[in-house]
Length: 488
Figure 1 (cartoon, rainbow, N blue to C red):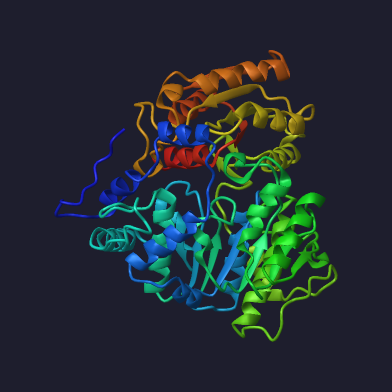
Figure 2 (spheres, rainbow, N blue to C red):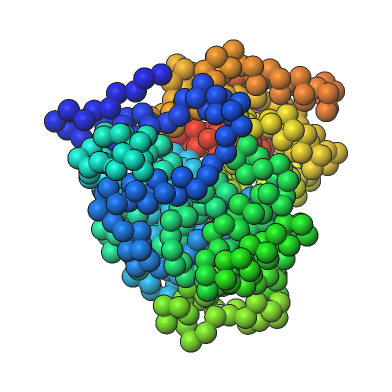
């Protein structure tokens, strides 16, 4: 699908910025060609980001002013970033930037200041400032022959570049950056001197880019470590992964510290639900305290010992953290929605356990609404089933695409070109999931396949009785559902 790039239009507002941004997506055919070639990300990715930064007016060393807390991992890095941001806010850090991915409803969610997405007007303003600077500058052809005049970074790289520009122009005092994929070659990894680096729980994901083993994945994640920058990880790591992280820290001239689950957090109510969030909250305490001490808001960091006393303002920050689409419960009429965009083995098992705890004693009809379009969807469904069966029996199971509307269109902020249009149109993944569910659960559930999220929502409405709905498998599914909710 060719999207218009509205450079010649008199009005360049938010929708024009989104159309231009969407034009930077890699299409499905290109992605598959790269996969088949066996090519993986390499150091050129970082050199390109440094060059793009120069082209828009920055030396990457200037980004050290942003006092970055850099976070990667397989499971929970977004939640950890949200916890850190909320804790920092309790200490009246004037302007706190937060860069995360993906977004749910609006691209502006990826770039936040003091917890709030930047406005659409500011997004458009800064977006086209970056766009125009790239249009009007060139790269040295012998070093970057592929960066021809007028070329732009891809979708995620562009947004990362934009985030640096926004936070620099807005004068942010501390910024929390969630890595996109991996770490070593991720476009966020041009930061030279972060205040702290953190790695959440590791698992197998993004194997095409990161490798097939936990050691390879840990090697990539450990690439965010920097010389003399304090590095932290959780104790709940696979041993092979932990050993690799320790090796990477030594290579980079720092020491990796393992963070225990703090005793003060046990039994405390956190702003993000789920028993497993205590692990992310503990890592957030370590990262936040290191950052606050580095900026002289605290005399020294909080100890990593299990029995360390957690300052009251840290506890308040953890309690008031908000992060949509992760273990979130919404009640709309007679329907209770249990929503988590889990899309890895570890995260979907955790989300499924959370849902089971919530509803196993409920007499309401139970519905599963599921999609995952690009990863091994059948394997994720098996992981879900292993954690819900036999305590939860789904009465109805709905497999949908991530298409927003029954008309076949997406919300403009949710346009995706990196999946096969033919597969989506023919409901290939959804039909395969339906067959997989029968092998797992027999024919005890009534199975539905829908071509859009709106159609799935309408199907649930038509049941006309109190129901519990578990929505999971993809943050894109969750975002699309929220858009449908907003238009009810």
